[in-house]
Image 1 (cartoon, one colour):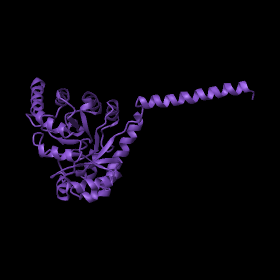
Image 2 (cartoon, one colour):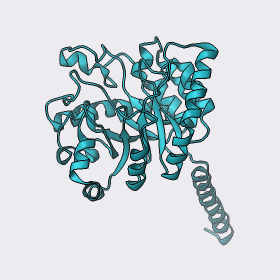
Image 3 (cartoon, rainbow, N blue to C red):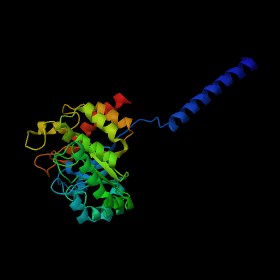
Image 4 (cartoon, rainbow, N blue to C red):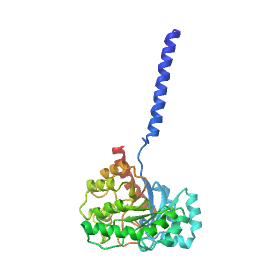
Length: 313
């Protein structure tokens, strides 16, 4: 090879290397990375098993944090009080996990003062509760009621901000925040990011929504979405059913196709928490007899969700 040919080929190689490098920098700058769900372990899935049994399962289900539920759904919130919060923090630190959420339907949105202080102390970013107010409203009456709810909540949101916590309202049945309109108005009227939404497809399916409706709602809620429950209606959770029918609430077992829902989460670049979820009958028992069986079932659902995510990447 003569010197001229060598220099030309070397220049072409260098140009290709620079182009490749520039492409990688451009992709990194544009955030062109694979969309991922950020999993949180809901303690109530394990009934009233001990925190000592549950904490090792955080890593096993691909989660980075835990959501502590109180009675009657679980009792890990009460266990944490008995254990001591410094002890819990140390146990979580050992597992490179955090306290991601405190679920407090029992306290309601206007009874969270002490819980907000605790969440601030524990660096817990989220409290999930329900929305108190009249039910069965529609149209402008519903919008007015949601506005009044948000106004009443503002002092609590100031405390949430002081503790770096978001209060997320779930669309629970028989609740002011239950319908798609109420959720959209809550997102529209929220004064800041310290008021969020915890979205449960289960309850919206009872209103006739399908996966496409849910996807559209997620896009409308956008950055106000703070918690997503990977949970479908299946055959419900209000009466005792054979276990195989009860488990139809889990992603991948029932009829709900989560693909459009996940695509919507990706489109808003959802960064909140995701809990793979269901309710057993009666409340307060594990969804399956042992912690290992519960974890295996959660991972079965997680495999389904990840397979659907791979289809939309």
